[in-house]
Length: 79
Image (tube, rainbow, N blue to C red; front, top):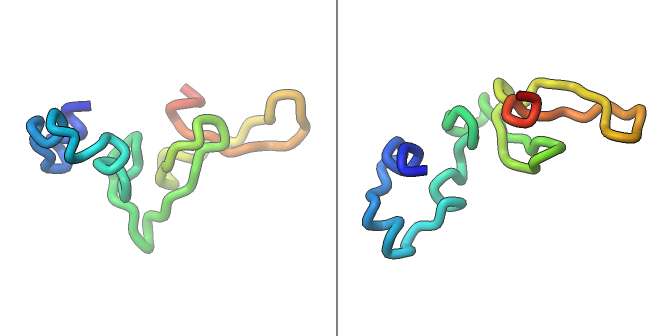
């Protein structure tokens, strides 16, 4: 997680002090590719892990377990 914090400009000291939590760091960003969410790059939640993802990382349609309904899952869950 240190790479994510560094990418977003959060110091390791902030993380140690508890001033910033991991959820606060990634808020507003895709939690896989770290692209910022915007009007053109909106966020959605993966149907399996329920994490915020961008459209590029949330593109797989699979059958829900025990159902005939298709759900959308992220690259991390499809993996």
